[in-house]
Amino acid sequence: MKNGIWIIMKKELIRFFTDRRLILTTILMPGVLIYLMYSLMGTAITNMYTPQTGATEVLVSGLPDSIGGMDETYSLSFTEIRQADAEDGKQRVTSGDLTLLVVFPADFDALVADYTVGIGPAPNVEIYYNSSSPNSSAAYQNMINLLDAYENSIANKFDINAGEGTYDLASERDTSATFFAALLPMLLMIFLFSGCMAVAPESIAGEKERGTITTILVTPIRRSDLAIGKITALSVIALLSGISSGLGTILSFPKLMGGTDVVDTSVYGPTEYLLLLLLIMSTVLLIVTAVSIISAFAKTVKEAQTYVSPLMVLVVAVGITAMFGSIADSPVLYLVPFYNSVQCMAAVFSFEVVPVNFFIGILSNVVYTGLGVFVLSKMFNSEKIIFSR
Image 1: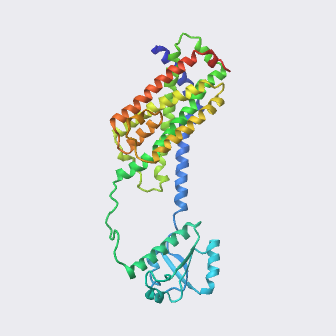
Image 2: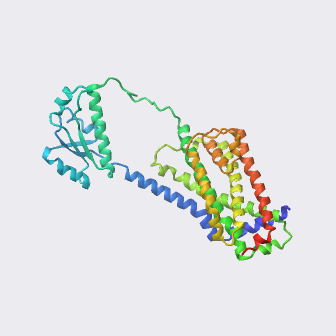
Image 3: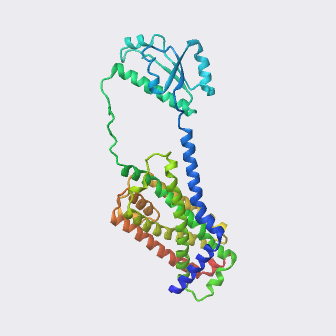
């Protein structure tokens, strides 16, 4: 039995690792492309939303004396214009030639002094900006902050979080855990499934398409050994592909997040990585088994990939659930294929692992894999399925 399994595993692994094209497209390229894509996205987003340095010129109509000296504090530079030139200023803001236009009502200081809250309309300051321009949006926000500060200075009753103390009490560990628990389960499921989809249809449906599987079936190797050998070998390859994609993603996170300290993988220790490894291995076995069974019904690799596509959509949809709500408490939910893996991943990343639920999740994956091996071995015994070319 062991010899038959090893023969099939050896055959599959040799076929894969002697094909440079497969190694390049399945293991190396996914991680490199993901790293480059996410890094470029992060750089582009950072450049797009990083406002220009220095004071921003702002055209102001009816600038009151009470506000005239506050511009430098908020990286603004006021330039007074006549009321008649305001329309021209609006056109310049629309075209992008001007960053910001502010129009104060005449005698603004007097109107503010005479105004009673709740009685009649308050003096209105018009701020014209272009939301499609990052610099204009930043200047608009600075102007809002300036006016808020002015309003507080004349009618301040209390402050909120005044001073330079730290009021957000979330630790770096909690912040990183929240980020990873929401995003990585979905990404890992996608990467693992993509790795399985890249090799399983070729190994099962591809051999049917080429007619080489009949050569294997006439040997004395047991059908169960054939199924176990293929699933194990394909799982190794898919795992390597998933690791490549995962590394590319994790390494690109700092650039994707614009160089901020929101994410820090050092918060995880050996225990979390060991639990994650066990979970990923059981998940890969389950995915490979499911994809192999579906591929066995197909006559060609292309047809197999078409059959597997709905399962891919299902896995992605299940992965998205990690972004919403808390981690499932009921042990029964950890019996649901794929969903249990997502919940266990979220638990590991958020440091909320419940040993019983985690054990149920991994054990159920192994049991489902065993059932899948049994089904696949029966399919290899079916001439109707194997010889449907």
